[in-house]
Length: 247
Image (cartoon, rainbow, N blue to C red; front, side):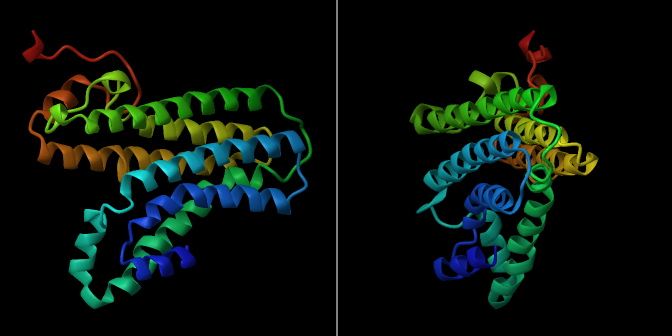
């Protein structure tokens, strides 16, 4: 993250930390694989799944964000801290992201250590959970991007496709991805410590920087979003509730 921070100073854009998030996990998975001598099947599965997830996320955010200017969150920090922003961003943005990446990536680090047992039922279950997750995340992002490209949807709330069943299909998918990786790593019998990563990621997505924060922002921007909140699940997909306005 130190190198990414240095690049952000040159670009004057701290938003690149978001792009580095996914690719950082890819790097962790490959380095852990190189340093470990664990079960070859489990190690390969963890590396391949993490690479697919991380590169997809990084490329999606790069296409969406690069050339569009710095994210409003970091612009606000830059105005607030002035000349001190470079130093503040080192620990408050890039440092925090680095620590969180280390914690969340525990399944990738520890799950590649042991040879036994082999890749079995729990690993297959983890692979299935990961598959559900990457579907929700990738399809949800694609549906939202397509919705935003249509000028007719300007100012409207996205409630189509997967977004009809959950307000945050991409965050739900991200959560499933990490629980899938956690289950695969857990099969190595290294201990419950590998599940700390998925737990932390879930808290971040649901309560901290994910769903809760976005709901708060959207409620301020679009009054009709309140109706969407009343009818649609905040995380786990399900059929929408019938609201009074809907009869």
